[in-house]
Length: 322
Ligand code: ADP
Ligand code: TRP
Image 1: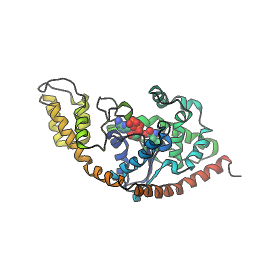
Image 2: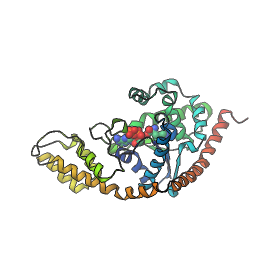
Image 3: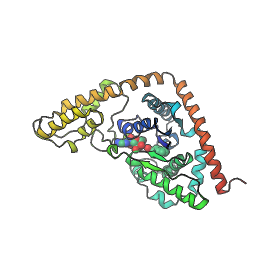
Image 4: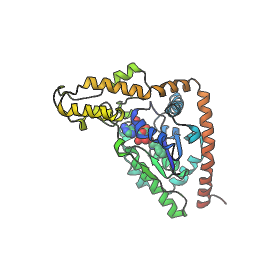
């Protein structure tokens, strides 16, 4: 069984881009792999400096995963900061990480351009991510396209370490589903909480309908033919609509007769129904945060069992065991 690992930041309301880009992929892998899923609160500290927001975000992200079907008994599910081993490994890795490797990362430039503090933590974010991945000897890391460069950094660090100190780390492979690589947001750009263009997974019907109705479309009249493949609304529809109905809509686009208002209403109903059960489960979970904490504590113990084995080997390889 392949060892598969991925993490998500608890820094905002999770949206359908996160769901199709990462969460669903992870939940589906539960059947067939040795699965590791965790909430990266240490990474979130590079952008969230609000105690209550981070705490609540972590609990909610955990509730989201559990509500959407992640079974903690069939995977390892924990919160990053519960394992101090990851910070120790980060330091060791940072001593062999070339500055140039980090200087090339566009995420640092993008985030500081958007107003995030140009902190050392933000700059070395990819090293912490490499430590997350390498600590568990992960073979496959499913992420959205935007994380591809960070995965390359993790691979480069693993190779450099192995060459310097002897074979230690598995060199991880990214898994990026090109069909779902980027879920568009309401305005057609990548859906992202930083662009304020998201469709959240967990939102009540009324606000959900309002959000879906605000998906941007062009002003072509109903009867005019339209190109479905350049339409933001159609791309979103593809994620939720059964193939036979999608084929009908596609033909309306091509031959004329596609009314955006009606299509948006259908999309709203599809999204509402798709997440209805998970929404109820999330409410139940949040009513009992003690249960969520218990699940995460057990998960951290399980994760630590693996982490200490790798860290022990690393300490030995570099000469920290005297
Ligand atoms: P955001 O862009 O909203 O800040 P994150 O960067 O926290 O989202 O992403 C968390 C996970 O969800 C990552 O694996 C990322 O690749 C994936 N992801 C985020 N937005 C999208 C999107 N629009 N389409 C596909 N995957 C996405
Ligand atoms: N950087 C990732 C993101 O913002 C989150 C992350 C942290 C991660 N550590 C990881 C993803 C390890 C995969 C594996 O989405």
